[in-house]
Image 1 (cartoon, rainbow, N blue to C red):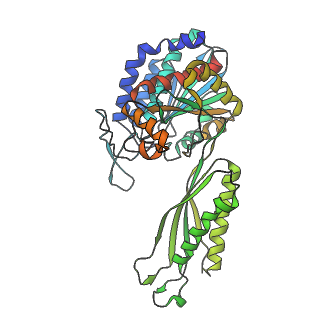
Image 2 (cartoon, rainbow, N blue to C red):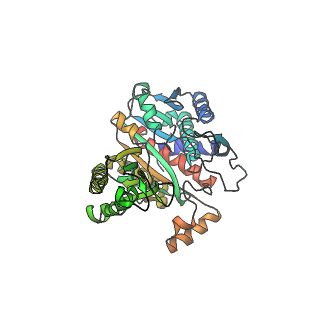
Image 3 (cartoon, helix red, strand yellow):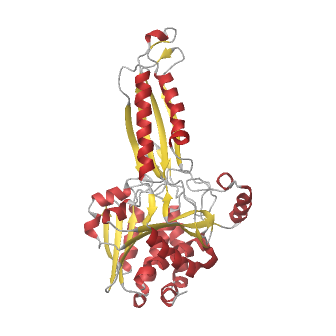
Length: 421
């Protein structure tokens, strides 16, 4: 451990218990995207108490805290705050029992099933350590707490609300995510790390008729079926074998009865890609297939293709990631790894792109206790995804320690790779 890391991280023991209490409180009180009012207040109050210049309400519930400490680089560290409409099944004494009214007016259970409570706690812990040890570093530290990552609109909302004019221009942006790896694990990856995710709703139009008189119809069910089959050839026949991508049709809706050919059919699908070139190629192929199959079927009306959600790919800057990876190797030793690409998706990269700043995003492990033995056994069998609770599962609950210590330390060590120089 370097002297500057030691000087800053020496304060962790004194705040560990408070951070654990904070984490359990956040886990017990999850909030959905753009409704993180309680969480945002806890964050802004804590940052003000630590001497940060705080701006809240950015993009609805986003919060930033700026700690200027002399001449030097500006480092921005980001954490997401929102939870998911999931009913918790962890059995923990601090499990969520929260329900909130959803957009459709029904009551929804809410849970921190993705670990954003870990991210908030870790960044607040880092912010406190940086505030307590200002003699050990120089520059400006910006803590950014983003709403509504799960909906893919939180980063966009903050940027649209003038984020780039409200905080100093960062030289680098840092972020992390707790993942189903052993607690204490830290994993970096240069280049493509998280996939882009695009969701489409496709409506194909036919001409309805009696089921006994198909000659009078243009059957949209058959049209949709042909499209679904043809979509499977995009990855298998239009992309190189070493280019990862996924095209999944998750929903088809058509008709009201067995003896009625309907007027239309709706197909909903999700696409995962790792770079903008592949993303564009796959989206263009989908549009081509849908329009061509519709025309080949004699559809009386052109299909409608609507993008209902879009997450950009997370592509880490090579040099920035190298610098962080070296700092992690020096601090974490054998617990520092190169992590595999993940099929999850994020909107975090929109923030550094708005600033024109390089960024890196890494993973930390949260599997411990009894689950650690389960993980080891599943790893041997290659069944981690089936046997170990993963993000968005109602059973996903990172072990409190050493997950929090790892998250605080990782963010602090990464920031000091610039601010400690």
